[in-house]
Image (cartoon, rainbow, N blue to C red; front, side, top):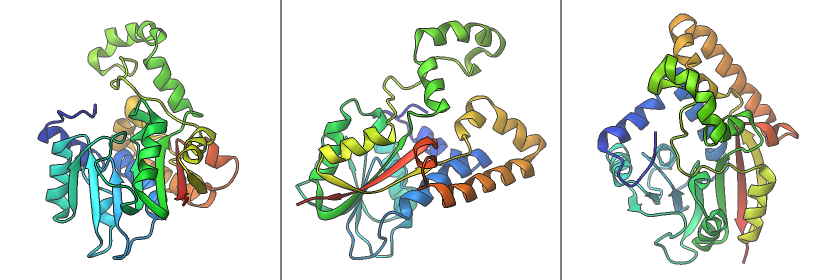
Length: 270
């Protein structure tokens, strides 16, 4: 799904449902939520910002009475989050220009947003600016050291157009090598993301990987749909094994550098 300011209400609902209606979506969602939620404090005393909150799936974990703000480019995504959560504050905005005063929040999370920002250094500087001294910033980003990134780069290149020709003849607009839907999509490696944190005055306290089971492959190549029809139990067991391995090895070298996603937590310096 292409994420823009003009996302419709129907598209926002489809995005939310995509994370719950299929085994691939459920695994992808949980394998992102677990490492991020376990890197932040969920209590009433903490003021939380979700920068790029979408439909509010991470904000749903906040403690009763905890203050939080969700920022997103899409008004319809924010409306969906407000309907689902029934509390909190939601603001239309961009990562590079956060509409908040300095040192406003105790904790900040940003999940799968940085890759769509052209000026990633400026975005990290903004997250650091609105974080209180001693507060934490947690960012999850797609990893550039993966086959997922190679596949994405092929679809964004001229080579992708050539590879796509036979698939277009067979599958039409369902081709798995059609033009990548995002005009800008730049993944980071773990060293690159840590360097951005340090440049922004954020001392890296934690780094780990996430999502071992390659849900992108199951989605783009229709393997997930096929297996959900003919072998759903096998698919469910596979994802459970992947998640079990993630929990044990996410912070262990070299696995933290090679999983589909990378998660970095930094502390705002004085």
